[in-house]
Image: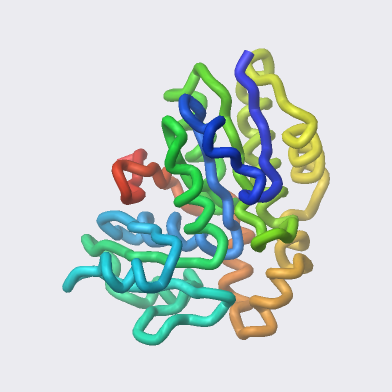
Length: 238
C-alpha cells in the first residue's frame, strides 16, 4: 500500500527523506491559491522563490513580480492576494512569486521526485493527478504553516485531499495518524468557517482581503494542477 502522510509544518521536512517521494505543498492563505488562480487565468508558468532579492533578480521584462514578506508587499511588487493579482494581465506571462511560507516550502521540497501545489480551490484536480500518475511511492502532503506556527487552513486542505484519495481508492492508501486526523477534521468541518476563523484568515480580513479569503474557500473552482517542472510551476492538466 502507498503511504499517505501529512506534514503539519514545513519545518519538519527532512531533505534526506525526500528522494523518490511525491510532495504536495499547501499554503491555502494564499500562495497555493494564488498559484492555482494564476495558471487558471493563463499565466505561462509560476516561478516561486524564497527571497525578495532573488525574485527581483529572476524577473525578466515580461514577468510579473508579486508576493509578500511578513504580509508586507515589497516595493515594486504586485500584491500576493489572488483577487488583486487577477486584475493584472497574466495570460502568457511568467509570475514570479515570493511569500513568507508557501514559496519557502516549495523551495525546501525540491529534492522530491515530484512536486505539486494544492489548495481548496483545486483539490479534486490534484487528487486525480495523484491517482492517475503516482500509483507507487509515498505521498507527502506538506502544510506550509507560518514559520513555526501550525495553520489550521493548510491542515484541513491536506485533509480534504486525503479524503479525495482515500475515498477514490480505499484499498490503495495507508494513512498515517496525521493524515487520518486531517481527513477527519476536513470531512467534519465547515471549511469556509475554518478559513474565515483561522488566525491567518482573520488577519487577512483585517487587512481588507476578505474577498481573497472567500475565494480561498471555494472548493474545486479551478481545474488546474500546478506541477514543478525544472524550477517553474506549470499546469500539468494542460
